Amino acid sequence: MSLPRVMIVTGTDTEVGKTVVTAALAATLARQRTVAMLKPAQTGVGPHDAGDADEVRRLSGVDSVHEGARLRDPLAPTTAARREGMALPSVLEHAQKVHTLAASHDVVLVEGSGGLLVGLDGHGAGLPELAAELELPCGFVVVARAGLGTLNHSGLTLEALRRRGHLVLGLVVGSVPQTRGLAEQTNLESLEAVTGAPLIGCVPAGAGSLPADEFRSAAPSWFGPPITTA
View 1 (cartoon, rainbow, N blue to C red):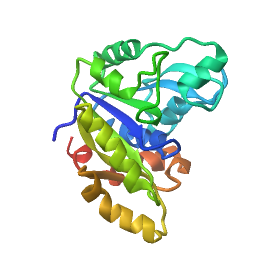
View 2: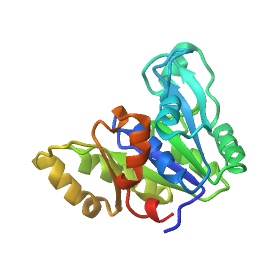
View 3: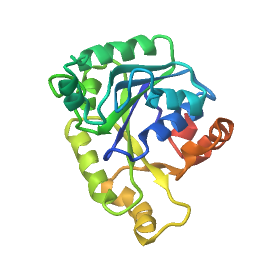
View 4: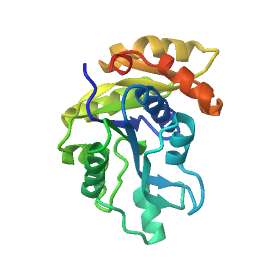
């Protein structure tokens, strides 16, 4: 499978490691391609706080990172925006930004907020609707937990993507503990069979705490095809 121009990183839930996975993808792809990253909505940060896009820049070394709306409360973007009295950009506006970035980069990574169906604009539209607005080939990378419950959450996320007709590139486990319990080990063995999607990466727990140069050096080893055959 050849990689599409746009790769959308979503999660089975919040706090599953999307940002570290996005940074690892950026670092890996940047070895052979020009890469841009877009975070349509960042919540839980103040005006001068470092957000997920800043973390992707720090870890990956990719400078072309971009942020849409920035919201104070650590909530879903639609809820945080309502509390703040802020109008969110539409998913069409986000799609237009992706097109602009794609005009000068080989690959655009889009990192979502929380899980797949979290709304990104005032109408509640999210990543699936953003993808539908794109006039470029795009595919989803789904970041999952290692522990108990991940088979169900991953299966539901994949089912939602397929029902909407979106391409799934594969699953990445966002934080694999060094010492695996029974649940973590059997989940890694079962994810592909349960979801019908390939397991294309496993990022070790604590990877985001590595020095940036070590992170960039190690990142390609955390992925398999199609990322490493791009």
